[in-house]
Length: 163
Image 1 (spheres, rainbow, N blue to C red):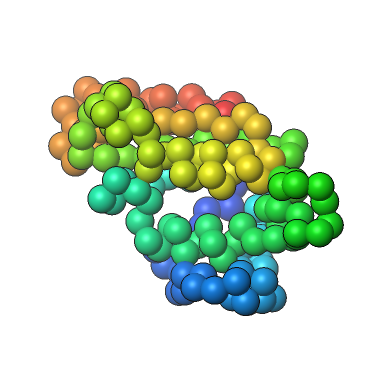
Image 2: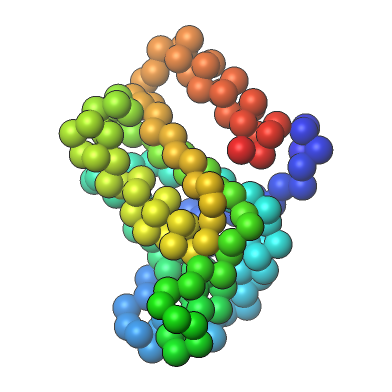
């Protein structure tokens, strides 16, 4: 966009993706909509995920999205095709930004960043992304105007570098 990067925006909240509820669901061929998203993920050099913290974790719609998109064949080699867990998305970087009602440092100090680590490490790092950078922004519900402007400026700088 402004920094010359090609951007594909996927608004997870507008998708109608069911959560995976069985191994058979996970092993099934993805829908055409999911296959299109998988293609975009495969082509991307950098992935940015932004979501709110809900009850200490990612929202269920984001979890359903990750379950549907990051299946064997895209994110991980299927069992029996590689030794151990092998991430297939190496050579790519990612950033995960989580917004929350509490200050970010409290989230990391008291809750150890669990609602962020489950995505950054449990999904992206395991899939081969490196580096995976993290940001915890809060309190996001009513930040003071100066803090909000600092966050936006920081995101613009990072976007210009695709970092």
